[in-house]
Length: 204
Ligand SMILES: [Ca+2]
Ligand SMILES: [Ca+2]
Image (tube, rainbow, N blue to C red; front, side, top):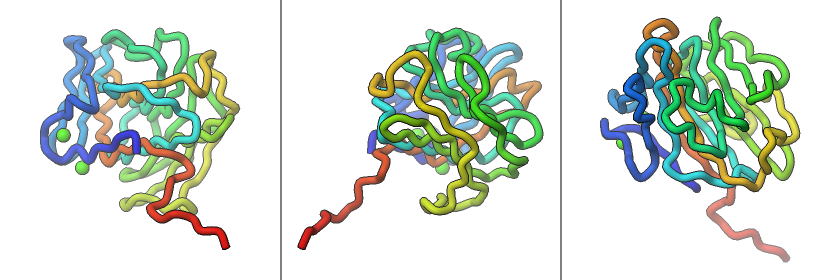
């Protein structure tokens, strides 16, 4: 496990997350979740304090409230509190929340495959990375999905201009939430994939 957060104590954990210091970022941990709030024309966001190598890992978030311009993103660089979060950074992946209850895999150079069907929160999103490829998965349910319940939307060979072995930050973002609504996130985790089980494997 790289790290996880249940956002349950009404205080953003400074050992896990850094909020944008842009004056328009108004993210708050309350009601046992992360509520991303911003001023107009500004992204509210948090990014992970530390960056981790994405290869052979999975990054999972529960969405408790959909919005029409939210993001669950990977980016190897610090957005430096930009009002558009990672948008002007050279390399990023984005599991974007858009209109109609839809989530849309994208990156700095455009969309990746198609969109999800219309979802109703709560639902879960997963970016899963193996040796070569990033997969964008979702599951619409309240409890955390089992491995067989995830549904893939799209995938591609890792290609954002930086390597799959280069550490990335994760970002949780919402742009212009007075107009587009607040994304509410919960139950974050970033761990090895495939998961390393609790029991050793025995060979006869
Ligand atoms: Ca907390
Ligand atoms: Ca929670």
